[in-house]
Image (tube, rainbow, N blue to C red; front, side):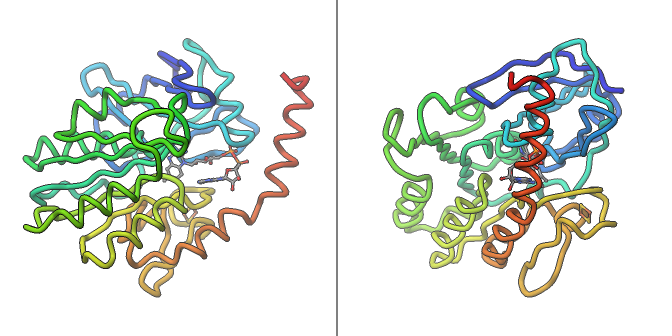
Length: 280
Ligand SMILES: Cc1cc2nc3c(=O)[nH]c(=O)nc-3n(C[C@H](O)[C@H](O)[C@H](O)COP(=O)(O)OP(=O)(O)OC[C@H]3O[C@@H](n4cnc5c(N)ncnc54)[C@H](O)[C@@H]3O)c2cc1C
Ligand code: FES
C-alpha cells in the first residue's frame, strides 16, 4: 500500500498526486516511470515520475484522466492508499552537455519534461522550453517549467494564451535562427502525433531529438511484449529499452496504430465503471 500525501486537480482532468514512496524517491531520476495500481482488482498503468523529494521520501505524479484507471486514480484523495506502486522503471534520461537544449512539452508532456529540463540546466546547459496546450485553461506547471528555463515560450492551439499555434512552429523558427548551431539536442514529449511532428521538424536540421514513447504497457518489465515499438527497424520494448528513443528513428504510425488496439475494450471498461459508480 502506498499512502497519498497530497492530491489536487491542476486543471480540468489533470491531477497531481504526491505519494509517500521513500525507496522510489531515493533512486528516482529524470525519465524514470512507475507502475501504479489504484486497487487490487484492476490494471496497472505507467506514469512518469514528474518530481521527487529524497529528504521527504515522496514522489509526484501528474496524470490526465483518459480512461478507467486514470478515472479511478482521480477519485482517490489525500490520506487514502494506492494498492500497489512499482519503480523506478525504465532508463533514466541521459543528462549530458549539449550547450543549448530545446525542451518541447505538449499537454501532459510538461510533467516528464520538467525534471529533465531541471537536470540539464543544473548540468550547465542553456534551456529553451516550449510548452503547448490546446487552451489556456489546460496549461499547468508553467511557473515550474519557467523556473528551470532560460527562455520559456508558451503556445496554445486557439491563441487564448501565449503564441497561437502548435509547439513545432517556434521550434522550427528557433532552429532556423540558430546559425551558430548552438542547439545540441531537442527533447519532445507529449502525444505521439506531437512527437512525430517535432521529430519531422528537427530532422532537416540534423539535431538529435529525444522522445518518450507512451505505448500501452502491461507488466512494465520486458515480459509481455505489449509495449513493443519499432525504432530504426528494430523491435524494442518501451519499458526496458526506453522510454526515451531517438525520434528520427521511431516508426510513429505503428506506435499510433498500436495505441488504438484496445479502444473498444477501453470504452467498454469505462462505460461499465461509470455505470457501477452511478455515472458520477
Ligand atoms: C512510460 C510511460 C509514461 C507515462 N507517463 C504518463 C504521465 O506521467 N501522465 C499521464 O497522464 N500519462 C502517462 N502515460 C500514459 C498513461 O499510462 C495512460 O494514459 C494510461 O495508461 C491510460 O489508462 P486508462 O485506463 O485511464 O485509459 P485506457 O482506457 O487504457 O485508455 C484510454 C485512452 O488513452 C489511450 N491510451 C491508453 N494507454 C495509453 C498510453 N500508455 N499512452 C497514451 N495513451 C494511451 C488509449 O488509446 C485510449 O484512447 C505514460 C505512458 C507511458 C508508457
Ligand atoms: S510492458 Fe510488457 S514488455 Fe514492456
